[in-house]
Picture 1 (cartoon, rainbow, N blue to C red):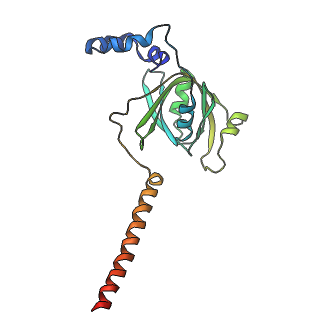
Picture 2 (picture 1 turned 180 degrees about the vertical axis):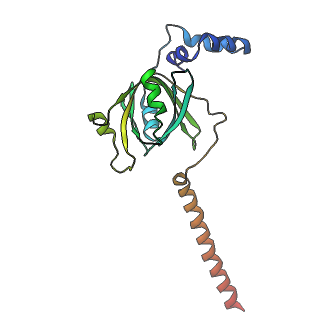
Picture 3 (picture 1 turned 45 degrees about the vertical axis):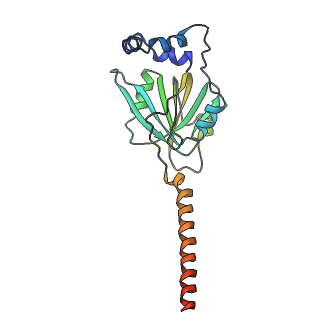
Amino acid sequence: MSRAFAEVAFTPNVQAIQKQHGSASSYADFLQPDVDREDHLGPGEMEFIARMDGFFQATISQSGWPYVQFRGGPKGFLKVLDNRTVAYADFRGNRQYLSVGNLTGDDRISLILVDYPNRRRLKIWGRARIVEPQDTLTQKLRDPAYRGLVERAVVITIAALDWNCPAHIPQRLTLQEMQPHLDALHNEVERLKAENKQLRASIGSDL
């Protein structure tokens, strides 16, 4: 856990609940000014982000309501520009534009990236800016092999990040991630069928 995360997440109301439940003292050290802020991406975070094909994103509406949606794309579509900046090509969806509208009024954003097979979760808080589709950066973020229509890019300057506890994260596999396991089972079934055929032939020749 980093001081940057604690400064963003541990509001007075949160600290009051922590105190009520006896966990405040275990987190107090992270708010000390001499603790490293750790508000940038390291090699581990960069590698993790490069493997993701989706994430959950939260923005804040003008009425103060949070809005969470899933953003998906080809693997690695959320790109690391530097150790304090990530960006992604924003593909056309149902054209409600809730997230984009929210960001025009309040640029605060948070992301949750989940690696279900390995039960790992990375949280990112930051400030977002919208980049128009004709911008050079938006063009660089396009994936020619992906059919989604890019309407804009979203560039996020990181304010804080944190690796989350793996407890209660279900272990799930996509069809692509499951395929090697299915292939192994298929090969084993074929091997057993061939062995069974040989045994039947051997038994038949002995009669």
